[in-house]
Image 1: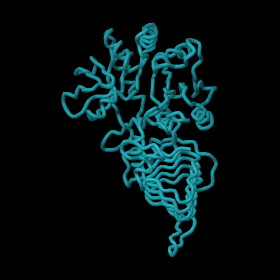
Image 2 (image 1 turned 120 degrees about the vertical axis):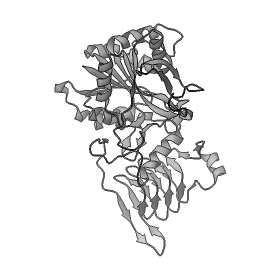
Image 3 (image 1 turned 45 degrees about the vertical axis):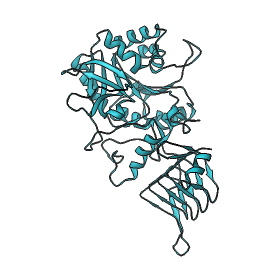
Image 4 (image 1 turned 180 degrees about the vertical axis):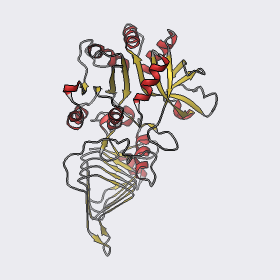
Length: 401
């Protein structure tokens, strides 16, 4: 089966604002050296998928540069392999992509030109490990028109996702996007069966559905809100494919890190003794592009004066200098500099952040290229933090330029 893959990476990511003020959500750092999209792309690479279009739109410069510099060299054009960014072409309208379904609709000609039997549609902003070949095999076995990868989620989480109702054969008989009252699973009233945003379409089914959707002036042109309910109403054979986790942990790991709090929680978990997400599995590697930088370095160990350069329970990227300051339970991205007598705790520092002397930074996400002057206090006085910075519902402070 000839499968073409499309990764949706054009969204504004408004729930992650202000981190997405100048950067596409899929290009945001995660775990120090990675970009969020690296996890989906690594899944593709580990699954043997080598025909990939990345649909970009909002603030896409850094994302497109990352794909070009960090990923293009892994694909061989002479073997018809590629990872290619596709911004809006403005052939159909002058507004770019407006909805996930419309983004794919505007690229139907490219998919058709690739001679595809099936189309795999992925989100570029989720963290998980999945072998897509298993889903493709299930799709062929069931002779489905469309297959949706799904995972169990608590009911409070399911309210922000697409919820499926299935029969005994896991054929989808109903689908509701972000319901106020999710339908619980028959065997577990505390959880619902939710879409992972991973869709596999037979080519003819996708082409027909997107064409009908494009002709509907009342549609929002979204896969969850419009395309899946349309196909259910038309009697298409839609199968639910249960998530097979390659993370090899006791509980399945899939995260939609669409808010500041969910992003922070998933990130900080990585510094724990036994993180839920395993970055160190050589059998399912997550690939990152790391610029040519010197090794991380710590200097000064003067206990008499407290001038100690050290990191504890932290991820420390190349190019980081702990110049007499310390980091605890934190993630330091490439090029971070922590000056003498500064302390960073429970925080995420993006590329090239400079922390001045005698500063205290707690429970914060500091955007790339931010310089914090000597004596900065963040995470100490909630009232002052509210005046100066964006603060999430759970009290995470976001510092931007």
